[in-house]
Image (cartoon, rainbow, N blue to C red; front, side, top):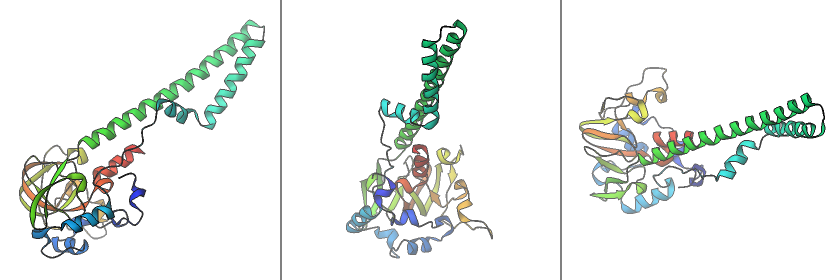
Length: 263
């Protein structure tokens, strides 16, 4: 998948902001347009293929990497730098043409100072861009490579990139969660979500809808309190469970972080 725009503005993952954690299992299945027995049958192969076209691959957008010259140009191509360069050129001409020793020294000092400021600013910018790219690469390395799903009533392993919203995902001890999931069955399940929440202790999971107090925006419920959800790139620390994929790729919580890092 290229950018979010490549998938299209009509992508339901982009336009729909359903508070999945506040819904019951039945409401979740209905909201996604799935059958009542979906937990047992999962998507058919044809349905999964159609959804892959509609929603895009389950992977995060990779920012186009710039060459060193492109990075340098990006940081010097602005009005402020142009002004500084102009002042430096004027000072350089003055340093070459004047005969007074004090004025010559001052002019050369100005040239050196301006060149140093531009160089330092460019270096800092390139360094920060490099760190951002490393952070984005680290996020991609956190993703699962495979997913265990139910398709056509059978349990199969599929590449995680082919996972689509509506897939029934099976989770076991040590598994990486392949996408954002609304849990529909748990057995002593707990996941480590430190990468998202900073919570070092694994979070126990459940399937009940999360009640929201009157007047509170469901989206303001902290991720760590959405105990009926599992999130992409987190790790199953204890137990097992089953969940329905509700967001993939750039539209997962980890995908949102990736977009912010790349921007």
